Image (tube, rainbow, N blue to C red; front, side, top):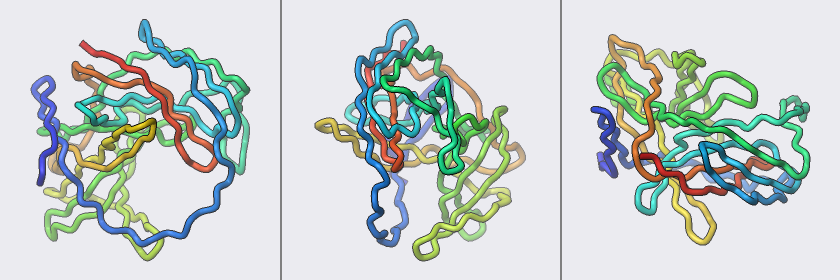
Length: 256
């Protein structure tokens, strides 16, 4: 296990380690549905409020997102939440925000740090919301069995109270990744995924790393809220187009 970084916060040791992702079969290129044609302008953060002007078409969803800065790396998402629109619409059976053009945003923020704990150790829990106007969130990571030491990608889903509602493991079968329910046994571990992003020339690249491995035992896993780690962050808008692609723009945020 290669430790890349350790954050110490309120008596908790939050580790980031390298992740050796299993090889995936090559996929055929997918035809684009409609590429995004929009711009994020006048982005600013002041008095705990994020403001922005967005213009353009083919916007599927907008998110507010926060990343923690460490040198030239940005880890997260510390926060990712859907930005609701005043009006919604049904598209292909999915509920989507019905954005106008332009879009004026003013979003009050009082972010916190979400951690996952097994009652002994804690890990970053950079959760993703379950869906637009859907309660709950999920956290992907690496599940390892104590008996065989076999590893697989897994997803833990939580309700609004931070309690587990479902655990799925994914098995790669040719071009598909098949989910199956998992009942963890004592000694099995789960290490949440963390995205490590870098930016160069306005282009963002991302790699997956791991947070602290937690052990299933007598106490159930649960999500907990803490204050943010003091330091530098980025806060901004993540815009998703109808083809699933992302466009992101951030401004600095300092936490003392």
